[in-house]
Structure formats: C-alpha cells, structure tokens
Length: 353
Figure 1 (cartoon, rainbow, N blue to C red):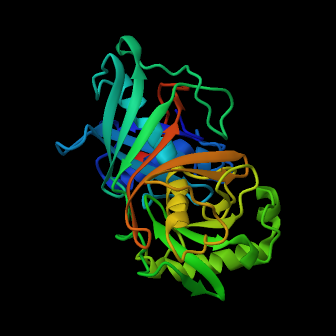
Figure 2 (figure 1 turned 45 degrees about the vertical axis):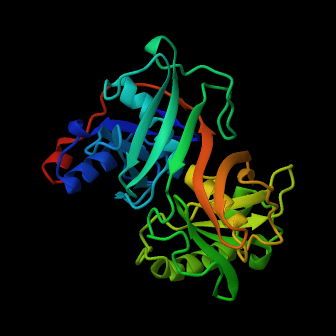
C-alpha cells in the first residue's frame, strides 16, 4: 500500500512469526537485504523500504495495534524505534479491508495504537456504502494525482520515543558550535538553522547529498545528541531525524530540508513535520527569527519541503511563554496497490540466512 508519501508492505501480525528475531529476518528478506533490494519487494529507498504489522488492539482504548518497521536499505536489518505517520495512513484502510475493523456508513473512525511509542492516533476514513473509498480530490505533495482524504488526529504524542517533548530538558542546545533544538512530538527531530551549517539554505536534496562535509557535520551532531535525547547510541538507528530550517519562500511558515537520517528526504515525514511545527511555536527555539507563527489557539502551520508543503494543524493551550500542543491534526491519503503473497526463502526460516 501507499501510505501518504511512503510505500510499504502491510502484514497481519498473525501471518508473521511470533519470534521477533525470526520475524525481522522474514521482513528483511521480503523487502530486500541489499542496497538495490533487487531480491525483494522494496524500492531501494528509505521511503519505500517500510513495513506495517497490524492486529486487533490488545487494549480497549484502541481498535488496532500497529507496529512500524523500517528495513534499513543495504544493511540487512530493521529499526523499530520510530513511528511512521505516512505508513500509518494506510493502516485503517488495511484493517477494514481485512475485517479487523467493521466499516460504518459514510466515515469510519479507526483508533490506532502506535506500538513503537505507545501513542494513539484517530484516523477518519471515507466509507460510503460501508466500502473504502480511495478516489477523491485530496492532494498531498510528493504523491501524483488526488485521492480520498484520510484525517489523522494525533493524541498526546509528546515524547513518543524519548519520554519528553524536549528530551534534553532545554529548548536550545549547542553541539559542535551549532545551536540546535531537540524535540519529540511524535518523531525525535534535531532542528538546526541552515545558515549555521554554512550553506545557501535552499539547496536541492541532490545538492545536499553531494555535500560530504555537510553530511559529516550533521552526522557528528546526530551521534552526540542521541544519548542526550534518551535514544542511546544512534549509530544504527534511523532517529533522530536531522532537519535544516530556513525562512519560507513559497507562502508557508518555515522551509525544511530533512535527513532521514543520512539521505535527504524528498519531502518531510508526517510526524517529523509535527515536531518541526511544534518547535516553531516554542519561545527560544532555533526557529525564532526563521519561522513565522500564526496567531490563535488553532494554528495551521505550512511546513515547506523540497517537493511542496505539509500542512499541520496544532491545537495549542498553555501560555505564550509555555505553550502546550494538545492535538496535532493533518491530512494524508492512501491507496491499495496490490495484495497477494510474498515468497521468503526457506533458508530464512531455518536460520541459514
């Protein structure tokens, strides 16, 4: 399924091995273990090397449990540390398609527990005549054409992977002489001003990927802040994401370039956008003087990225000096692409692979 601007394999939990180590080997084999993923169903890119494991919820406060698995391209391993809000968008349609949730007439709400962080998100899916509607007029940047909207209301995702909205305990830190804001409102992100990294601020992903000195400095910062953000050694983790911010130039509120964590994202992740938008409203963060913030309790933030923009709605409480994000909502789309069987070599099952 395509979920948001990502694509991945969706499995029912019951169809995978109960043993986690074996499950992970099976998923790597299904997606592809080499850099080209020539021997699997992946697309040789972090955005197309993803997996959703879906089951009925184990607790009464949710309908569905969802585990996100990032198969790390070219490394033959997985990372289950972060959430993925794009792949999440496909979880509700998948659950309805497979009878895990009964469709309602009109719109079906599906409350999903994101097992990676133990947070909840309510997805609203169009189901006319109790059937999923994939066609519609909603458009999201990074995806061609239009589709039916899926409204995602994130509920209390602060500290999703780190235990705190500001995991270092400060809104501003300095690492290698660079001011950073370490934030986790659904996704651990390190926000940095692009100008502080000595670049022109609006380079393309290709240009940034070719800048080896820049990537080395960004990775040095990432490795140092990992333990400070309660993530431990992040050498082999895909978090924290590293985000460069600059003033918006296409009518939005902030312009971003995001490393995920080593390759530059063609867009920006769903929960990454939520974390960056949240950083923009915090007094004293690196976004001060870079981002513009709308007035009012409900803030519609437009986060620009290399292929367009991402709109995030923040419902903000607290005070001006200490704002609290009470709810984060956004719009995604999804599409069922194919269903069937993926074949996994016997050697994977018996431990020879």
